[in-house]
Image 1: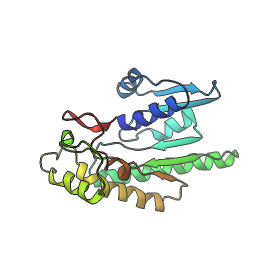
Image 2 (image 1 turned 180 degrees about the vertical axis):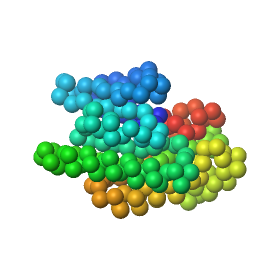
Image 3 (image 1 turned 135 degrees about the vertical axis):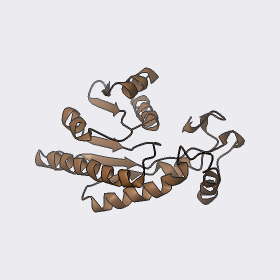
Image 4 (image 1 turned 45 degrees about the horizontal axis):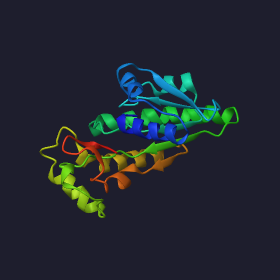
Length: 199
């Protein structure tokens, strides 16, 4: 995952009674390492691996062999011609992992989190939005100025991933962060400077 996935990881660790530090996120961004934290009196381990393009997923699954997998590429746009083949490879690794789980009698869970766009000029918002289409139009209206982020393309790529998941023969659940977060232009960490990360 990416920095947004790390926010979810940190929230999960917190709910389980521990603290995830930002230092671990920074370290995992620059060093290809899986951050693992024990929770629930050392009965459960929660891991996070920074990988914007999910490369080396096969190796990560073999090294850590999780029983729950939560994936997303984050707000790092890749052209569709490169993105789709990458997703097919990722889902192939997930399929092999699930087959291994099944072969040893373990029920393993796979969750895909949809990608969340930022909100251009988020400092203008002081309360939640209530119309997804209007927020998409707002984001699209800034597309020429925000072209390097491609926030306006995330809905389409989310739909592409969901179509690939349907064809992939993996068992999965979707965590729809897109529809939830697009309605919260008012909850960014540093409005006016960071209109992607949320509080």
